[in-house]
Length: 353
Image (cartoon, rainbow, N blue to C red; front, side, top):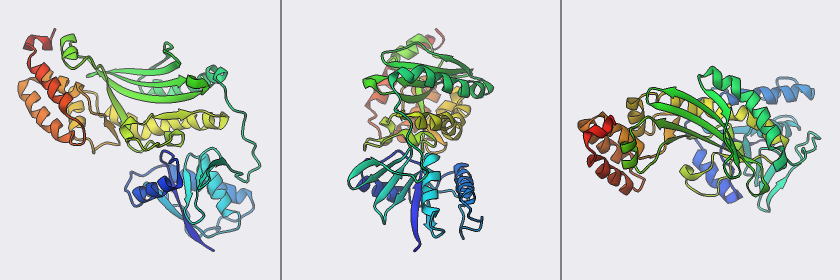
């Protein structure tokens, strides 16, 4: 019997009811083409052939040009087809929603049912690797650093291990652009005896001290992706707004680290680096701030675009504020008005001091 399952890459819901809402949300939602649809097709085909099934095992193979957030795939093939799809998709960080069976297969060998979250037998005979402990952090960071350093340095970033802060040690990439500095920090934490990571990308504009003080002392504008490709497999959606979600998650065992190594660059390559490349000047940042829906990522609302506009001059400041006020339609905008009042009170000499 054939029926359809739904494959997506998105932060993990915590219940089947939430999974159904997510299914409805992602259905038919347009998205830029993702190279991972081709990866998924290749992985499924390789597994099927390895199990002795000819390439003509399915009438409608995955379309690598698919441009929607979820993929409805028909289960209409050999007996082992469903098992292979689940193995292949979850191994690449996708979730597989089987609404007829009331099961959501999640990355790294977990399944969500009405009874809750549990491990599941993926049918490949693999035993889950031992759980990682906080003592494994140095080895995990060393592996990630070796994989990421050459790629980030090729993009013009310097790369180094930052100073420990509380339970965190960061790997930090930085590059200087006309507006100031761009940073990508991957923080590895051992808080509450769990090994976890978080990715924070930001633009740090070069502004006079008086202007920064009038802006509330904030020094960076955070850049986030919209779809979290790559690192979505690590993220759990607890029902908070996306702007407050942590871009990362717990590294429970070696499978998670195996996935994290390529996953970071899926997230950076698809969503963060295009935004950073498009925000190298003050004018670029102001355009991105007032056109929040145009890029693969977004600048989170901040006081700093107002400060950049003020430095450009009074007319530029007034024009930008009017546009930014509209772009912040779903945010509490009292802070923007307060910053505007503080900036207007500054003498123009502060723009160069």
